[in-house]
Figure: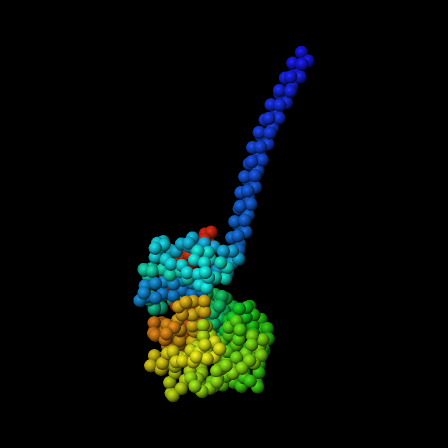
Length: 399
């Protein structure tokens, strides 16, 4: 009997052990599955925090019927370009109508950090309408009293008398930068990187943070800079129109480098300057204006746009250097924006809704116009575009 009880207990213990092992294995498998799912979810959430983009430019070639969108991957992970979906006016665009090209990258599929992708959409079923109904203007009484030159980066900065008014890219007013000590009479402005640079009193350039704090007087050299009239800045230099006579170059630390383009030859009396893939100058000679282009080292000067196409231009802007197709935007005769391609051929004239006091133009994704009578005007094409990128990241754009 004792043996029978012992045997029964042994069988019971073995069965219990087997049952425990089965339960343990099931629980362990469930835990592992949950743990793996949590790891996957965590990695997905973490990677999504590393995704970010910057809209570089949108342009529409109405003759070729092609909409081009350039977006830069400003995040830290690579994405699959082929996962991009495009909706225009709420309608999904077929992949047969879309070509994607990474600019400056050997990869045709992966969208690496700091790479700009150009999306070209054929037959997008939109049309360019230069109409005040497709713009967003603001009352000069409440936001802009006397708008002058402007510059666009991640925000829009408009000289307004002795101050600078700041707007979001949708042209929503945000704040005013004023400084009665360091900002007396600004005449030209450029937003570059983390700073806003202002030509003040036709004598020096001051640097402000984008929040409006004065940083320093970055260019102040009465020996080499006698009468600055306009300027441009890129990642290497300041380019300054000095005395409507020549172009000086200064380092980003404010040190004089050289007279990059001297008076004579192609250059006569420069009025304004913009630096993109080259140096673009509004020049005046022989009683008329023309637009010249130089290489970044100051050589290769040649007339791009002649006097027959422009009258009394005051401000110039050029598409971003990341782009394969560039356009030139000029305030023409103070009452319109004339648009030319990179060869100097006319593309479009924007004049509807503009007054006879157009002061400045800048371009990033859309056209921004400083108009003394109408305030800040954003030129739209009148359509909405939604980009759904890899991992579901979405960008909404108003054309």
